[in-house]
Length: 114
Image (cartoon, rainbow, N blue to C red; front, side, top):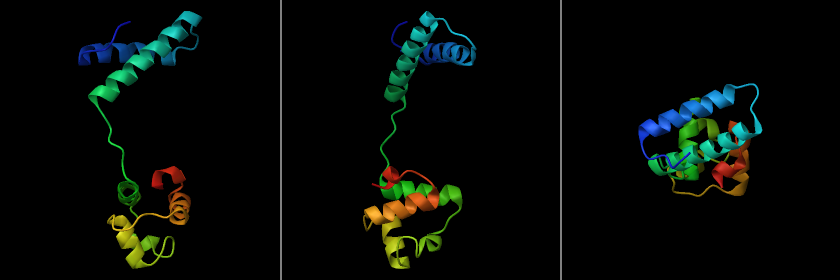
């Protein structure tokens, strides 16, 4: 195996990893090769498709959108309507207590909001 440099190489290695992943039995050599190929894929993906770290307010906005929750639903969960609005609009930081409440509400890790 070598460093993945093109999309074609990436697709080829990905197909091999998928075959190994769905194989019921792997030899010790295949397990080592699988780990190596996964590392090569992760390196390629991190270089070609970097993901920016999201801020807590961006994560909250995303969760509101995908769950169909509106700001009003969070009133009483993390504070008044003014507090909720300020947090959603990144005018106020999320406290640890609010982070815990949001994590419980959306059933996600508190680390997303800290």
